[in-house]
Amino acid sequence: MRSPAWRTQRSLAIITFDEDGYDYEHPAQRVATIIIGSQGVRRGYVSRVRYTHYSLLRTIEAVLGLGTLTANDRYAQPVDDVFLRGHQAAGAFLDVRPPAPGKPATRSASTLASVSGGMLPLATARPAHPTAFVVNSASNSVTPVDLVTHRAGKPIRVGADPVGIALSPSGAMAYVVDSGSGTVTPIATATRKAGKPIRVSADPQGIAITPDGQAAYVTNLGSDTVTPIDLATGHPGAAIAVGSMPRAIAITPDGRTALVLNWGGGSVTPIRLPSGRLASAGPRSFGRAGRAIAAGSYPFSISVAPDGATAYVASFGSDTVTAINALTQRAEAPVAVGQAPDALAVTPDSSRVYAVNGDSETVTVIRASRSIVPSAGPAVIATIGVGYSPAAVAIAGQSAFVVNTISGTVTPLSVATGKTGRAILIGTYSYPTAIQLAPAGPTAVVISPYAGQITLLDTATRKVVATVNVGSYPVAAAITP
Image 1 (cartoon, rainbow, N blue to C red):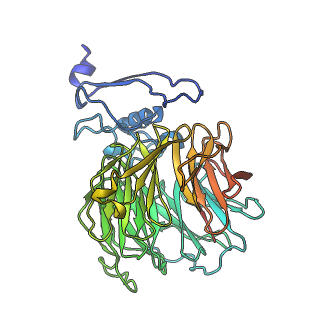
Image 2: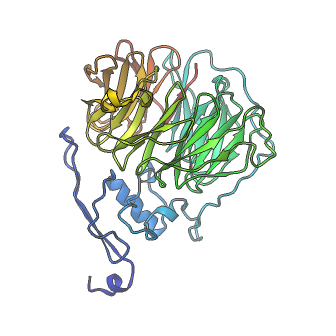
Image 3: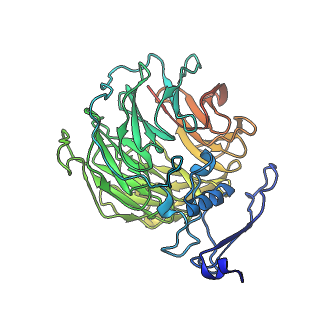
């Protein structure tokens, strides 16, 4: 600290330790980490955000303006909250791309360009069998998997670093979000052919399609915007400004409102969507953004109740779930849950919400907003223990299925009684992170990025049906009817 580097420059010292063994410790292991800065670090501050060693690597890369090494650090949350405002280590560097040989690093431009020719015709047919289209982030591909034969088809090439996928209401078209190339790739699900990528903006992350299938809305984390796409023409519309670092988006069942989850802004931005036929020539034809709604620190997941009355937001940094009235666009008082909630699911009757607490190995069951009255007691109904490092949840029939990453299991949970069933082993060291339910039938697809595979689970018998190898680092899936 007496060196010129420390006294005259911005310097950062990080002291941390290796993680402990793979031994299912409870509660979740904590790794001591101390961050000391010559300037710009919040003195005496203790972060409540869940970080990993990859987060430290992502922070160092951002500070030095470097590219990332693998999907592990590429998708890690940089350590931002320990820095004073204006000194964030990552923030402004999130859209840095690795430099070309002999050229300095540059940031991606937040531009929109119309697609001129080459757009895949809007398909109407869908696969004969229900098919899971699995997004492989590290191999820049989508693998179709027939859920009847359990066979994987030939990988479909898409853009760089794909992170998300959405299907048209008919299931005939899939739209893949390519975060690294700032595009969306359309795929005809019956022919399994990809069309010309649609340019959106910097670092797109989330996508949602309107119930009528006319438009898609894509969140661009690197430009704080949402890009609407006219799906009939494949043309992007004018970007809609939202909050800081928009990560996810959900559309109400009536198609009137899109709700944008702003990870960096701790808020949700509502977008009033147009009714009737789109007029893609006008800048306001795809909707207008309203005032941001506060939703807790680092909101991570958003889910709209099936009845469309309420949206629920899980805030990873503040350990809360916030209910937002979809009609009035006002938030209710946040409900305290476990540590680092990272996933949500609402029951089909919209009566209960299941919040997955990633750092406390529990699921918090919440009475839905419309049922909360002074005589009803607290909003939290129960807190139920599950596996180690739960990361996702889906509700099928009268059961919730919770994915436990470190345990490599899925915990079934009775909606009626709150009791857990025997954990379903997905695979030791498989590290599952996501689950997707088939629209029809009792099949669930569990995604294991590090194993490069998906596991097909029968939700009725609670047994594993098959394990299928897909591409490198699968992260998401969409399933046709």
